[in-house]
Image (cartoon, rainbow over all chains, first blue to last red; front, side):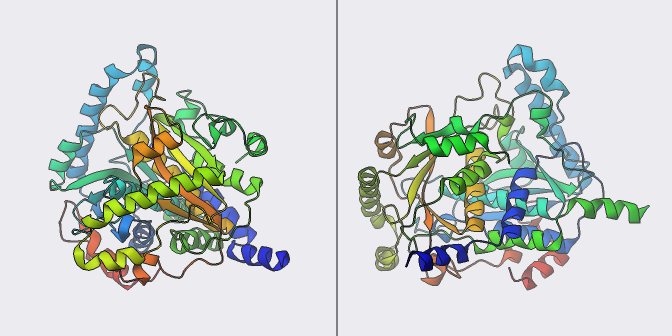
Length: 240
Length: 240
């Protein structure tokens, strides 16, 4: 009986090579800013990436996303100007001893990447039946973020780099892309072939921050609750 | 020259079988409510899933997440009571002609799954240097959602089902799990082995909603902008 049950469980798992490929995408995905190449992305590849995004989970099967493909260089330069202005505004809010390092960081690849993609959330798409959103109306935004992550991981498997530009004034971006009031731009992405995927995140390599130990992030039953010692022990010894 | 360049691009892509495994995880992932089995999850498997979540992108390398593992059945029943109350509150807000269908939907597996997991966002973890968050402070929440999606996809590859319970009062959930003010519970997940992954999303099969055509979600240059005809044509003919 247990043998049958365990067999049934294993049947739903991927074979080892497939499972390893999923983890490889997750562990080697990078927020790419420095290594874009100008080579165009094949439309068939881009369509696959968008299909991956479109199969994200969505609250109430709402599928609130749209995908704006931005190729025009003038528009991209205008968006880059928004980034540059926003970076100047953000800088004084960074701890003083870190401002010099902040200035050195490359934080976008808007004009070097093959194309830009803005993934938006249309908040009106529940059409009067907000299943799963009455208590938590932000769930449609979370769904859209899941679509971004699907896109990012599929892109990694295709050898395509993705960088998320979050240093930008949202209202100015909405004006630049004619985005209406009821739609929220969730992610402005730089997308393109890359010369390499860096072995570490840029912010780790530059010394901006260190990877936190996973075992210290695990809690049991309540926030801050101790326990799960076996799980923490395994997590503490694990290398991705 | 072009050959060299194309070769370099291809080198960053996964081999075909690995790429297909990533898409398989994305396309066959389900929001599981009905098919949980009681079999426990091996701690080594759970540690791998959490490591996958921990390697999500995070704004400013903030890693704002914590993982509360909830196994105690009394606590889970208390959370399920919160769900049941929230569902009653949500129901009158659903269009009247859909309320009967809404009542029939199974929307959680809190007590049938092997364990529950609450993934939270600690908003204070930027420590005075909110890189990428000064204009968009919600970016830490988006990072945490990316961790949820990493967890979900890795779980699919491991044959583990995940269901996200969003019909719940957040403040009541915070009290039940002793979550402090500066921490936001982003996702309350039911996690466990499953008898099957359904071929379609439950809400599609039940007739609650239909999959939107991807080609209609693609825009060019600006919101609502026409164009990208080749891309839309390929997307329109594609099957996941």
